[in-house]
Image 1 (cartoon, rainbow, N blue to C red):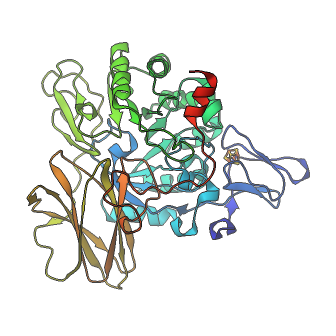
Image 2 (image 1 turned 45 degrees about the horizontal axis):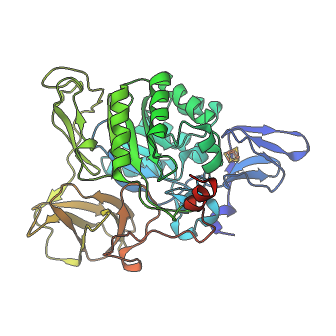
Length: 485
Ligand code: SF4
């Protein structure tokens, strides 16, 4: 048994039943558990007749990213966020892009780091990051830690973003609403049969939950992963759009996201781009105001345009954004129409230097290639004094003059996600002072964790070195052949 399962603490949303049995009311599954049993999620269980959580404060490495990573385009574009993912999930989607942490049985101790709520808030404040993102596998099964930390973060003036598949009970949502500012909800489909067949869950609680947080006045964005051949049809897109327009609002941003083969669905290919673009056209034609494509680069359809005059309001490339055409209230500078983009006051600039100094012991580079247009820099200071790491971007025969400076206290580790920021950019250079070790992890798009360092994987191929699930595969082709479609 992995060591991370060896400690636990009391869980919320417990119901005590006769004979030492407990019921969990965190997700709609409502697992009923006898002594020693674990729930479907693998991270809550019955210990001594009480409901316990086994993943409190246990996280994959805290990672600095941009808010676009979370399919959030209308809240402080380009904002730096601090992302935390944990262990377990209340669903088991065959196409999961985060299975290595979502499936508790697949989690290695080496990928688990311990944080307290105070640690998380301190790291964000010290790095001038204003937004915490509860993300990756799924924050639902991290309820106690999310609540404790989000409350503390709120007191410190930070914002909380919750990125989830949202298979969650109404009671749990009510506990989150006071502390969560932004909900980015991954709606897998608006077809109940799809949920039953591919997610091990069911649809109604997800859609009801979206309505609940929207009606509570929270900022909501909806994303829909278009999985090749099973949820990338025009009909599938139409159903999602109809639901958004009927139950939410035409101003809620909608993201159609490209899938990569993963977990139990590797017998397929990435979602064909024309299907994503067609979904976008359909949604716009049906009346959704802001429709985006996700996990795609070199496309104008990650930008925000004014729906009245067509002006470019927010320019994006990959996961990078710059606000160009709205005023401080989110109104189009040209025609005054409300873009429904919320802006925060300008943040303090990140530290940069043109001269990192002579005592650099590690200088490394990587090139973007194929679909690998992002990297996680995993930086560890093994010394006892504060030391610095640096990175900058390069293009053909040129590089940025300024290096971004990352200061690490003695013994500290940190992760930063860096994505290609313009078409002509070719890659990254990383440098570090004595005592700092830096690993580069290639990443596909936005959506997977943990990652594999370049040195251990198949670098410089068109395929990022994703961990490969060794269990049984689901063959969509075979299923389709059997059903004759
Ligand atoms: S969170 Fe959901 S899956 Fe996990 S124990 Fe509770 S009801 Fe079961």
